[in-house]
Image (cartoon, rainbow, N blue to C red; front, top):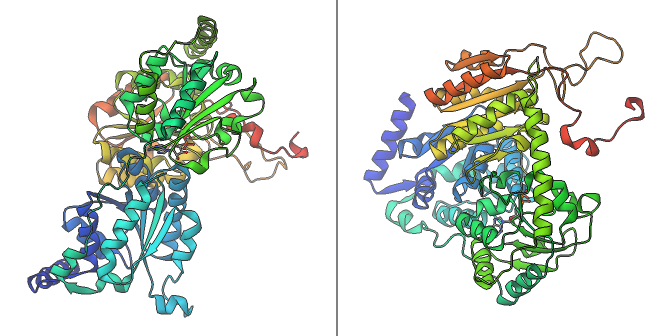
Length: 577
Ligand code: ADP
């Protein structure tokens, strides 16, 4: 601590002489642009950058592993439309953060990974520095843009470029490389202040071409069985009221992708979620709003999509169009502007879809909802996924403003289908990659950015990737309730080693593990529950108290399916057939 004191005194003295340095310029540049939080892991050469950021009023959340800090920054970007900032040390710390940066880019979340690095002279001659790596070169293919700043007077430009690259157009991850020497460089404070840039209009509106809007509306008007598909781009865009108006004015059934759930409440009469396979197969015109025809939508073709159809796609990225199938009516622009233009064009003269289509959708929906209600009502003992999810569904209904983080295989698939969301940007999950390990990073950032409670429902396998962050959650005393669905293994907890040898099967974990004790180890609250009633009581207590809580929900080890819903992606060996 004496070291920090000295450091701060030194910087105070420097300021007295009207000097500033790289440390202060980075912090001032971020603050000038409204960035208030840093998610990171301090160490050489950025320890003092983190300390000084905190000393200068930024909120610095220190994690136990950079990947989790990076995931926190990524989801902070999604939640705020400002780039989430992750700060790491060089080489290994940078690489740990890079996974999250790549994931942010894949998901179109704005994020800036700031890593300290070794001196260029030594790195470029490969002379073997402490944690030496050419980080800029490594980062470049994994993000939207990558910059390095070598001179203190360029920090303002570097930060401004990073912000613009992260949030403008299709949002994504940006890498900013800050060599150790840069941070210590000093310059005249006044010159330094003038070198900073407050970014004006970082994500400029992009107005769609009128003929593109006309073409789209014509196609929609001619549809017999139209469908609207909302993706997480629509959730990110914060055009909530206009999107709802578009859905309601046209009367078209809609489907939300998982992170678009809650953009309109899942209980909305036009939601076709419970008739998903039917509407995808039967629709003749599909309006995509901020959703890509990637693997999550079977690339827009094949059995899932059944009857021939035409697509209208609203997206900010022109190169997304025709990426998988032909798009008949692209509408390029920001979702807010595009949806407003579509609404304008539609005016009051839009004839709602015919009763035949709407009744067919409702019929499917009612049938499937009744089936689901039956499944949820079953009292299985030992507790299974549906028994546990029945109570969590009611908890979310009673607390619609909480963030709901969800990762796993079966835990993800079942929870997505069972748990209704009521507000936009509350469901935070594994996203485009279907990645595991985002849980605790997302939970921490959701708590920090929204100041509201978080319920994180994770499979035992998924939780393992970022579980050590329960210490971070306790240290910052965040209102996070984690529920670990513990069925003793990956997918299921009953696999046997085929050789009969001593090693457990490759998908098995220690049976009967008590994840709740991890939370207790750091001063949080732990519960071990074996029935839906116990689970309900424990979650409600956690939400009431706001204390860091981990509930080990014991799930039947035989429950769950191989690869969850992704069985088709799992090549089967002839040995396991
Ligand atoms: P999902 O997985 O929910 O289907 P995707 O991440 O595949 O969603 O798609 C999001 C799409 O939204 C991307 O193609 C991205 O370019 C687009 N997008 C993101 N933000 C905006 C915005 N503000 N305006 C228009 N399009 C956007």
